[in-house]
Image (tube, rainbow, N blue to C red; front, top):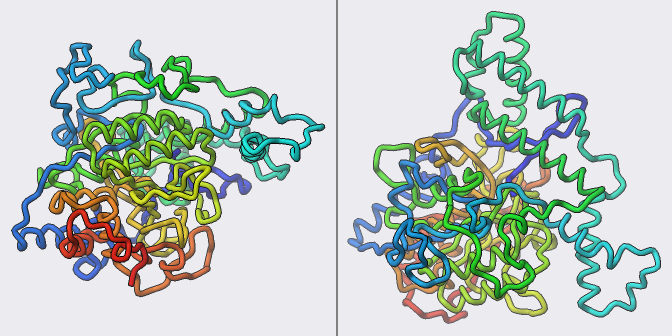
Length: 561
């Protein structure tokens, strides 16, 4: 799911836009998330200092495979094409499963939401709608006596009630007016057409528009419409094309939500993929097209981790010796548990040491399948890094899936890191905090915060880059640091790498705003385990003090001293 923040405009209509915050008066530098507070004035990850430290230590790096479970990746991108993982035992394009792993032509990864005929899932439904209609005939009865339900049925009933509330609403009048939303979108499309002619170019940013001198009444009106939205949503560096694409996608999403009140969502995945989703053993489906659909999100995530460094192009990723294995399992909509569970297993079986998971949802009907895959990754020494979510919610008490807590068990996976999004006051001037306004948090569930606002990285198009924001961007920052630690200390266990990240985090000397509030100030230690922002230099220094393979719980506590 993408990160959407609500602002009010035109009669207090809640219009959702992807906010990549910036300040009109002063710009955050591109790549601020890599900088050092003492040296540069930004609470980034001190990456240059980290590389200088390993150089002085004369440490040698080992290539680390990082799996990214996401929407796909632009395999032609100038900053990514040379850092993609290549399956050494697969011959490209011959249609044969050369390495006998069940996935033919999986050269750079696998696409679990594609069909063998080459078709691919781009848009899918929300999990709440799927669960609501899955159990509607079973539980939608006025005479239902819930006291007589067996434990499994009670659990399913609990999911259904939660899904019903999401799909049908809670009876309040706080919903989005689709008519007005369509009106605003049409006004934006018309204004954009006028501005393209007036400015003499098809693509422009909010900053371009801010300095543009209009000469006609029509252009002046069009400029006021678009510029207002750019400023209110703090997306001055976003292009008009992305703005309209994101806006259109959100309107379509709201239309689908409204439609599910009357009818079950179309089972797009089944029609295209063709597997038996109820049978976990039916696992050899999909295709090798990891660039299919809309790879914006996955391309951006991959670039944060490992865009080629020091090549003079675009931007630098965190890692200089990493190969990205892309596993496409996340559509525009909610991912399916089976696809995620098999994606994790695919990554583990093909040599990934770290898996980035920048996705999430509110329900997980087949969580036991995901739990089993997480346990498998744990047994094979693979670290999982997951985005905390973007609802400004306390995930100590609010469901956010997947998570490390196993269903029907007291067991919690030890190879799991949950990441919240930190920020800079310049990134969101209206919020003005070192926490991101949208980030989920949790004193017991969120391990560490990482930069997640205005993160500049690769996007589809071969040579394009843009700012995006969300815990989806914060998670790969931590994934990148974890991979960096493993580059130089490859014998460390996932538990030790997690310890390095938590222990080596930078504590903040000031209080921060609690996400979702206007003025509630807290310590970062009140809303996370580490109480700090991930730091590459700090993590490496901690790693240098550890004995490889030693996982004594008395020395590897999550809490900072």
